[in-house]
Image (cartoon, rainbow, N blue to C red; front, side, top):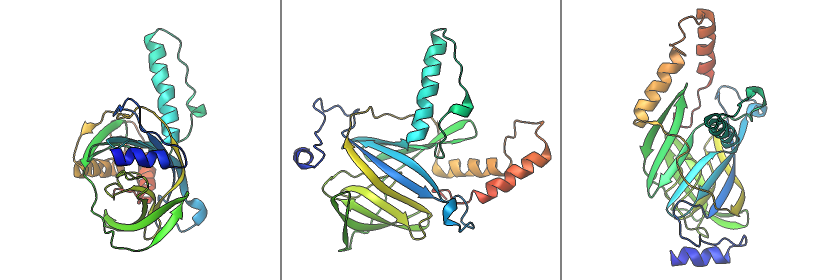
Length: 260
């Protein structure tokens, strides 16, 4: 911890470890531009999607989420409080921020918990650190930080990461953690999923899970997800077959989940 403290003092952004040493507060926030495709058969680069993702962390814990998702969550959280206080609640869903990523990733120690929804239900599955190959001499600079190269096999894809030992915390976007420094850039071989840090700042926010999901294994979660895609909204008995068939066809184009 002393090494981390000294390094934070030397960082250009003036990071300082939390004075209260409160494990529930972050020290650093990283903003990532997440670029991805939903349909791997669609090669039009203009159809790539982007989302601003946030990683708040300290040495002991972290939370990773979509900035737009968090904005929507705060609106509904406030609406819940207002309703409990007998205040009028009126939310126009058309005016809500639009988000593409609804999953979150919470780390506690070396335990990593992914929480994602299927329809209206949330599920949480646990994972450990990935295994990395760091036997590379390549270096490059990102946001002023010297970064080293590493690779990992994740869900049958090879990802190349660039991580900085100047921030020696085993952190990165999504489940990409386990190196001896912070990952600032990572993408798979075809760049179907690409993350790039676009900002780093000192910031103290509460680190905690953003949703409570039904405990499941990753395999159970993926199975339930495929079941929903093959039979969407089974509880809606009056849903016309034509409408359901169109949904099924649309889901077939959503073939590039980061967990697949």
